[in-house]
Amino acid sequence: MTLPGHGRYDYVPITRRPDIVWPGGKRLAVYVGLNLEHFAFGEGLGAELAPGGPPPDVLNYAWRDYGNRVGAWRMLEMFDALSFPVTVLANSAMYGYAPELMAAFRARGDEVAGHGRTNSERQSTMSEAEERAMIAEATDTIRTAEGMAPKGWLSPWIAESAVTPDLLAEAGYRYTLNWCMDDQPVWMTTRAGPLLSLPYPQEVNDIPAIVARKDSASDFADMIVDTFDEMLEQSAQQSLVMGIALHPYIVGQPFRLRHLRRALTRIASARDGIWLARAGDIAGHWIETMPADRGQSS
Image 1: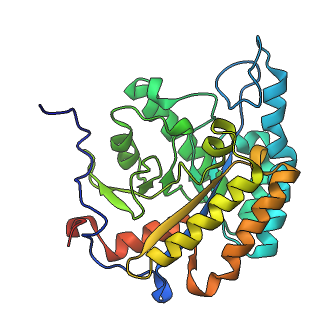
Image 2: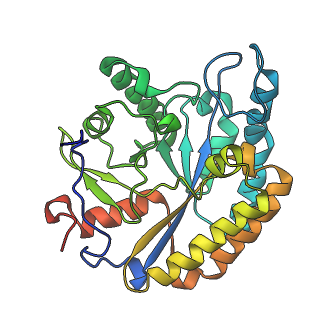
C-alpha cells in the first residue's frame, strides 16, 4: 500500500543532520511570532471566546479587537522592557485598520512577515488564480508600508492549498511558517525552486493551548518555560529553533500578560547563551550556511 504524499520534503530524522551553529556559537535560536490580525465584522472566520450567535457576532468580534486596541500595546511595552525582538505576522488589512500599531512595531525594527489579508478567510478555499492574487495583494501592501517585501509567510489559519508553497516561492518568499514538523529549518521542494520551512509552534501557541485546550494562563507560561529549558538542554549537541506564537487578544489580556511576562523574563535572562532573533534572521542564517543543494542529511 502506498499512502498519498505531499512530495515537499524527505524524511530525515533529527539524529542525522549536518551540524549548524547559530551566530556567536549559540545552539538555540528563539523567536516570537506575534500575530496582528483584523477581522470582518459580521462575517467570515475568527477564534471564539464563546460560541457565536447569529451575525453580527459582536461578542467575539469585540474580544478579538481588544488585541489591536489594548493588548498589543501592552505587549509592545513588555517587549521593550525585555529588549525582545519580534516577528510580526501581519494581516495586510492591519495597515488600513490600525496603522499606528504597525508603525510602532516598525519603529522597533521588528520584522513583518506576510499573514494574508485577513484571518476572516482561508486561502485553501481559493482557486489558484485567487490565491495568487491574494498573496500579491498582501505582499504589495507590506512592501509599500515597510519599504521592503516580506521574506516569510504564515497562512491565515495555517490553511494551504495544494499549490501554496509553489505560489509563495514564485512570489519571492524565502521561508514559510506553515509546517510544524521539525525543530530545525527544513528545505521544501516547489515548482519554482526550494522554499525553507521554518519551525512555527502549534503547541507553544496560545490559540491551540488557551482557546482549544482551555489551558490556563499559568499553564501556558509554564509550557513556554518548560519548552525553553528542555530545548536549551537538547541544543547542547544540536542547534535548534524555538518559536513562541502569540495573539494579543488572548495573551494581551491583563491576567495572561502577567504570566507571559514571567515566561519571557526567564528566556531573556538566558540571552547570553541563546540567539534571540527574528524569524527572518534565523531563516537567512540557515539559507547561507545550509543552502538547499546541501540537503538535510549528513
